[in-house]
Structure formats: C-alpha cells, structure tokens
Image (cartoon, rainbow, N blue to C red; front, side, top):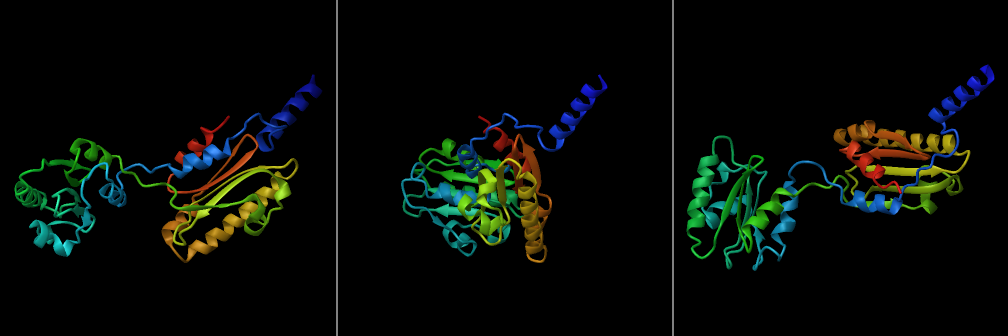
Length: 269
C-alpha cells in the first residue's frame, strides 16, 4: 500500500513539473498564426481611421487628409478647439467626409457649432454625428450608419507587422538545435521600436530543459536590449507570460498576454 502511494505521489510530482508522460494536447499552429495576426486590443484605435477613409465601400470620391493648419480655410473650424489626437478626411468635390475629432477641454459645443455650420452648407448630402469615447464622429458617405459602426469597431492589432522565425533559423535566433524541436512557431516584430514576440514550441523527448534554458537566455537578452532603449517596451518584455500547455512551452510578449494565450488555447485540435 505504501509502495503504491509512493508511486502515485511520484507520478503526480512528475506530472506537475515535467508532464509525467505526453499529455494529449495538439495545437493547430497554422490557426494560431492566422488568429494572432488579426487579434485586436480592446478600445478604439484612432490610427485605424485612415483605412476606412480610403475604402470605396463607403465613399464615391477620394478623401484626403486635412491637416490642422487647414481646418479654418477648408471647413471653418478653429484649430485651437480641437486636440491633435484627431483625424479628418474630406473630398471637396463629392463633399464626403470622415471626421473623428477630440475637442479641447471645454470646447465640445464650439466644435459642434462650427461643424454644424459647415455641414449645413452641404445641401445635397446627408450627414450623421455620434459621440464616441470622447470623440465627435461625423460622417458624410454612401451609408452613414454602416460607416459609424465601422468607426466604432476600429481596434488596434495586438501584434503589428511580424516576421516568422523558421525552424531552420532557430539556431541563429535562439541557439537551439532544430532537432530538439518537434513543433515550433515564433514571430518577432518587423518594427525595431516594438518588442512584441511570441514563441510556441514542443520540445523533442528529453529536450525540454535544454529548450527552456535557451529561450530564457533569449528573453534575458531582450530585457537587456530594451532596458536602456524604450521603457514601455522593456515593461512588456519584463512582464511577459510564460506558460505550459500540454507539452508546449509558450512565451508571450505583448500588450494583452491573457488574450493572446486564450487565442492560442482556442486552437487546440
């Protein structure tokens, strides 16, 4: 009885730290890559408005970005009433418009008055306005309701433009022999001012600790790289998520590690 109990406890201990045999979890890494490429942060993303402004589904004409020094001349708006964190696109020929304006403190009603005056001069186009997360959103388009919904759905990608580290190149990047990996997916940012990274690896039998040590060394190098460069990116690296899912080792550096990890878990076959 004591012997059986000892064996059970030993196996439980091994299961906690090493898996005590292969766990029956299989990830679809192709799906992981696809899903993470479109994963979005929560909250509105002003930078995504430009893509809507060039979308022919919403506009007949060609909208051009209006710089704040042209606000007064082109639309009769007072530049000082509107914060820099705004985005305004307009076509003088078709009179179509997409404006996402952040009023300066105490100037919301002034901005509304000036915009209403401007829009009142566009007699053959219907317009629509909504307040959304501190912004005044104005649209003059083919389908104002549809465009307003699209504006509110604009979210920032968790991962921007990324490049894949192939299994063949893992020796150069992580100092790991490719033969030590049964499965591998790693992507790093194309932009040198971003630290977003994710690594998903299933080590070959008996190679888990070797792989862990190599990836931990890589993460330490990332910390040193960002420590004196960009503090916000250093915080992302320092607060990275490290998890084990079945036989997979998962490392995530992002602005929303939980969402990324949940996306990965959703790809279990």
